[in-house]
Image (tube, rainbow, N blue to C red; front, top):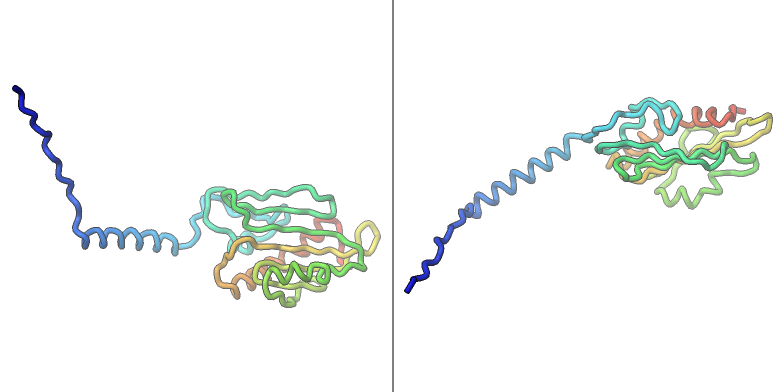
Length: 192
């Protein structure tokens, strides 16, 4: 009769609770410090915003870390440019522009949209502008094809970058000041 001999039992070495806690803490600290060191961008900083030349230092504050940046312009008509800024399939910013008749007040028309963007307040850009917590709008009278018109642009931020709202509003004001007149020129609307 053969006797059944059970296989030897293997003992797994388990670290003590203290060692496990120390290891977990080290992992958390490593991840936290990596996150605080600034955006980890594997993509090149653009020198334009949706085809309009803008200093990359003005665009940079709004861009997160990631591998790929895409600026996706889409056709909404010659006088109504539209563009999405995307990082790794995540929408970061939506930019729109429109040439409208001079009797239209875009700020009044978009009043609810501006409120949705958070606490809009006047800023000195174009003929009228508003900066909000998550976006901005500017308007100016212009001439296109010999006709009096108005140009309006709106920048909507989809992420809270920079995290601090006052910094975000300040950076957005600087970006709008640089972008707006060049975007107006790009649709052949000259300052009236």
